Length: 172
Image (tube, rainbow, N blue to C red; front, side):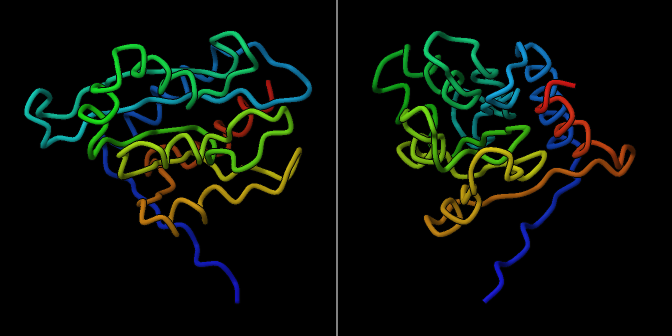
């Protein structure tokens, strides 16, 4: 059976946060063996300390030591605030990432999908699905099977947003 296509969203706030994630991705130093990805974690609009939604953390590929991915960097910044922060602050939060979260790491590090599923993040917004350059990514499928919402962000005013996410990911 063919996988269901990932639903899209073009809501202005989602486009805005994806553009912020793309700006983060552009900070990545390109390497031949990995993508340049950006991530933004946004609070739930119903969280008592952050209504409307606010940016909780940002990250980009290799920002922190250890061959780190963008999602990992953003999550690690929140984890630095203590275990209570992870559970409380991330309850119902969303993560915006310029590329589908990885489901396999050739380096042996924990994949970003597992890191996200270990939190209470409820929604994942991606700029583009991961191409098969390095591994067969199943991030979207795994997230959806675990009950997380996954959307591709499209910009009605700039139909090349996904293409830009992929170009930056490939260091161009």
